[in-house]
Image 1 (tube, rainbow, N blue to C red):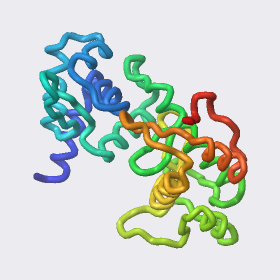
Image 2 (image 1 turned 180 degrees about the vertical axis):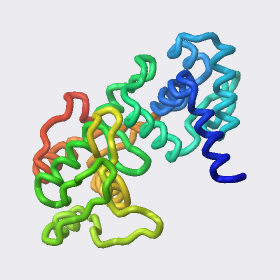
Image 3 (image 1 turned 90 degrees about the vertical axis):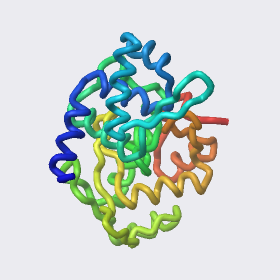
Length: 233
């Protein structure tokens, strides 16, 4: 299929507000038709029809669990696409507002987002580690004299990843400010997991700071508490 035709088909699939709302709800984690009906406050037949369109467009997948069918976002790329649409287009409808845990800290594809991701991005810019961005999606560089600061975290600022941008300011849809995207952002996210500073939420893309992570944020980044609920003991 012609790439332009595929893109146009995708745009048509995403053009319905309710389908976007369903996708945003699925960003929080897998859901049944029944739970989506309650969250959307719409008829079950209508929600089911929209899910069928989304599945046909390969934006969601489903699997049967007993009598229920569980729906989820197809892959991280779809999740990032939906977040980008809301970041550019403005706040989602009330039915699609994210859970508090996703607002505080989550992954965006493979890098850190939410309040945590934005705070880390700001700290890296303020400390002179990242060259300040001039635009929301501009490629960023690492100040040569500060590469060692990242290396101490286990991040190789000189690594080059084929067919991927090294670092850029990725607009965060809940905070409306940038977090760190690209290969550098992915390395930093992995470092946080490797050091045990964050843990995954098994039911969504949310992540939780550990007590050690909270101490690391304060000592290494100068970042104070994000929320009382941001730490998992």
